[in-house]
Amino acid sequence: MAGILLSHTEKVYITHGVKNEYRSDGRSNIDYRPMELETDVVSHASGSARLRLANTDILVGVKTEIDVPKPDKPGLGKIEFFVDCSANATPEFEGRGGEQLANSISNIMLRAYQSAQAFNLKQLCIFEGKQCWKLYIDILILECGGNLCDAVSLAVKAALFNTRIPFVKAALMDGGNVDLQLSDDPFDSKWLDVGSAPLLVTLCRIGEKCVVDPTAEEESCSLVSLIVGVTGNPKYYNDYEDEEELPAFEAKCSVISMHGPGSVSPQNLRDAINQGIIAAVCLDEALGKTLFRERRDTEQFKRHSYGFLK
Amino acid sequence: MPGPDLLSSQGLRLDGRRPNELRRIRCKLGVFTQPDGSAYLEQGNTKVLAAVYGPHQASKSKSSTEAVVVNCQYSMATFSTGERKNRPRGDRKSLEMSLHLRQALTAAIKTELYPRSQIDIYIEVLQADGGAYCASVNAATLALVDAGVPLRAYVCACTASMAWHGGSPAPLLDVGHVEEAAGGVVLTVASLPSTGSIALLEMSHRLHSDYFENVLSRALQGCRDIEVILDKAVRDHLAEGWTKQDVVTV
Image 1: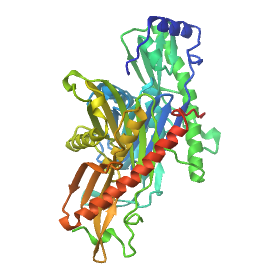
Image 2: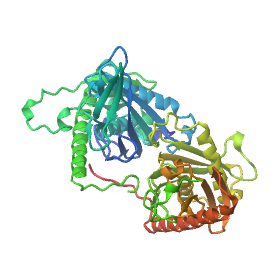
Image 3: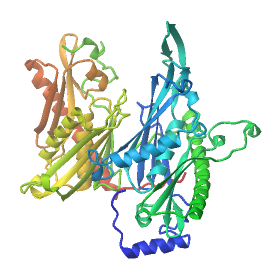
């Protein structure tokens, strides 16, 4: 993303390390870097989250609006992604410089969330055919340190987990026009069901092996990278008393995308996708447990809010 | 005339402050590692991030042989306002704010030290609750200090308005969004408090010239108070050493 200058020797060093499952910071090929996550950072938004994955900093705000559903999908709500590459990350993003990158990320996210098994839009419906909720998911990229798509998908899932949808208190039907009354109490709302929301995993092909969570230096060594979107497991995002009432969980791929001027053989592709699914399942579990812990701390008033001050 | 309900009968404002009280300011220098200097500032509920790149080589079109070119960009996040904003930057108001920022900050930077160079200052407003321009100027000052750009003095900005308390005029310091929307006059001042000079002055709505001096002096006093807060933050930051890169396990 931002221009990293690497000498030929450094590239060889990284490539040889990856071949032996050993990267320059000591991780293995499927290890992620440490992350910091905090939700509810922006009070004007219905839900928000800030994620810091080493040097990459993403801030997501979710706003809700009442809208008319699409005529061919009257029982479903709407969802819209908007990515803004802030000039804080690099001066090249000034003005409209970051638009191409922003569009590519928002397109991948939209495709990942399109399937009904990834994100159920039925929960956003108010009155079939007349009124539904529209979610505006606004992603602000504050700093680029490699691996943007993963960080964006994690932050989006965390922000959606934090989003409250107000309950509709009363509705007056006035000859076909519906007039809604929403409750004034901010706590009289429901949480969204985001257990199965997809997480994107970027796999960079360096030499013959694929690495997960590439740093900016590793990204500049690779010719082609593969992005896999894998649906999440609702088990970690809801309080289920009885473990047996859940259907058996199967991770599903909701989007696959490739970037870069290189190419991948079919066998490598299959291995990479499997690797991505394994990484996504582990990531999903860790994210779910953390978000749940944070929600519990908030409900018991044990949580400190840091925002950007820490 | 501003509405009479900006000050209650006990002399308290809509958010419970006294007329000469600033909102709580919390700030941090060195928030990001990529820019040369960065800062985060919260003034009440208004939250602003500033990043400084430079001085670096100027693009050919903008280069000047006498002084450094200061390039500012003011951008508001789409979720920063109550109503969702469609475009973060590029609209008229953001361009005007960028020019005002440039005006205020160029007055403070020692521009003659870096001819043929450019300093980029990028402001990102995360939450706007009135006084976003002032918070931006204050955050930009901290970011410039973090980047090591030589300044003549701190630049601090503050707003002031006017309300009526039992028939006598009472100037209000640091106007919030609700007070701004109520329709009263808003005077924005960016000054270099240690030298006492004013870099930028802007006013909206009407104010009788009899009260102008009063409101202006209240705003300048606010700038001096903000300078004390910013100075303390800079000294605390330097006392604790290099910028911290937090590592927290999940």
